[in-house]
Image 1 (cartoon, chains in turn cyan, green):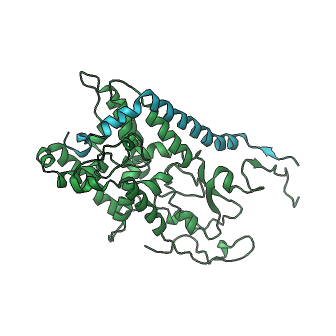
Image 2: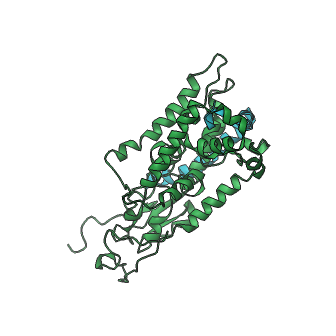
Image 3: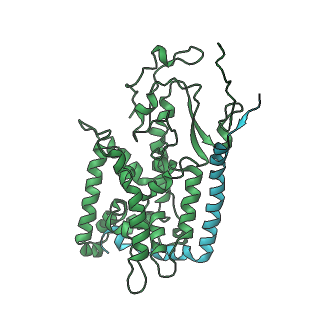
Length: 54
Length: 328
C-alpha cells in the first residue's frame, strides 16, 4: 500500500525555512540600503513620543 | 507558582489511559524556568547600567539592531531597538516609505520561532505574567467579545504602525511613531517613568501626553491582574505579526493524535484560552509550554521541523485508509 503524499503539509513545513531565508536576506538588504542608520539615528536619541512628552 | 490542573477529565479516570493501559499521575505545573529565561533575557538586553545610574540612554552602535520583543529603545538600559519602534522610525522617515529591514527582521524571527518570543523573550510579557500572579478573588478567564477583541491588535498594527506614520506626515515628509506616541504602555513603563525619575529636566516637560500614557499604563496594569496578558491578547502589534507565523514557523508544537486521550487537560491550563487538540499552533499560542507539561500522555511535543517528527509518525505522509472497515 503506497503512502499518499500530503502536499499542503509539505508546503506548510517548507514555508518556515524559506521565510527565514527571505527574512535574513531582507535584513541584510535593508541594512545596506541605509535603514539601519535611520533606526540608529532615532534610537540613540531619547524618543520623546515613546516616553510621552513629545 | 506551582499548581496542578483540576478541570476536564482527570488523568486518573479510565478515559485518560495510554494505549498501553498505564494511568498517568497528575503533573506539577511550574512556570519558574520560563520566568527565569524571561528575566535573564530582559537583563541581558537591558544591561546598560550607566543609563540607570545617570538617567540617560545607550548611544552605541548596537542600537541599530532590533531585539525580538517589545523593548522600548528609550529604556535607560536598552542595548537594542524595539522592532515596532524601528519600523515606525523608517516608515515615518522622509527617505524611506517602507522598512525592508524591520519587515525582514519580523519575518526572520516570526518564521523561526513565531510567538515563542511573546512567551519567553518579551520583557513586557514577563511584567504582565508577574502582575497576573497577584491574588485577586475573581480572575477573568474569558468574557463576551473576547475573541472579537483579539482582532484589535491587527487593526492597531495596520493603522498606528504602518498607515499613520506613512501618510500623516509633516511638511518635511516625516511621520510620528503614532503607536509609541498614543498607545504603547511599554515605553511609559520601561522608559518614561525611569527617565522622568532620573532626569529632572525631562520631568519639567511632562504634560498631557504623559498623563494620557500613564493612564493607559495604569489600566494595563490593573487589567493584567484580572486578565492574563491583556496587552498581548488585544493590543500588541508585535504579537499580531508573530501570530501570523505561528502555523508555519520552524519551531512549532505538534500533537500526536494517537497518544491524545481527549482529557482536556491542555486546554484547561492554557491561559491564552487555546485548545491545543484543535490547533496546537493557534494564532494566540505564546508557546509557554504549559499544555505540554499538563498532558498526561505526552501527546504534545515541540521542536524544530526536522528535530521532532519521528519516522512513521510524520504528518507529511498520511497512510491510505482502507475503503471498508476491517470487521466487514
